[in-house]
Length: 222
Picture 1 (cartoon, rainbow, N blue to C red):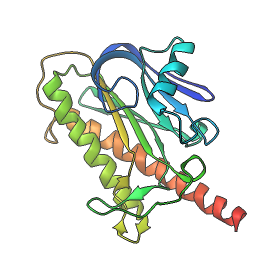
Picture 2 (cartoon, rainbow, N blue to C red; picture 1 turned 90 degrees about the vertical axis):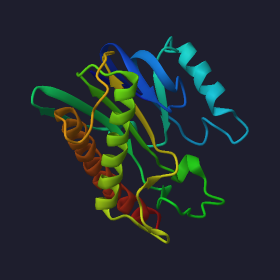
Picture 3 (cartoon, rainbow, N blue to C red; picture 1 turned 180 degrees about the horizontal axis):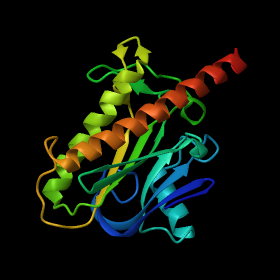
């Protein structure tokens, strides 16, 4: 279940699950029952503020220190969801996407002097599967989420000076599954197909919306 209460977006996983992420708050392998997004802008995080400490304090005030939490400057009303069910296995993706700090893998754009609070975007993906996985299985499943994200961003065709973008410099993924002993989640499996299908679809839809929004923003500012 999703709840939007700006500046928070809450994804209730429905039960405690094993979550793997490199999120700002509670990264690594943890057990959590919800994943949060915190929308931030330049006034929230001046350059001299430690983002991790600031977010931890903000979550504590909300009684949400248990949640795996992303930071994003994307308008949270622009989140996107997609669900895929393959052979009785369901994967659900919730994403926010901006490409203003996009990168081509293996090369870096020069973003010196950019005001991240105004201009920067990121890709945050929360993906929940109903198939129990071991920590090893979560690692393989994470590789599929990453691959599907990259494929979708490439298909968006967002061109940089370094080539077609493959992601942003601050992408983050949180993958949730019931704890179990299944070690495999490859592309030959129903689980792998569901993960790839739902991630790809959500990123492609959200990325196209961001491109529309960015074109309109540039027209207004130009």
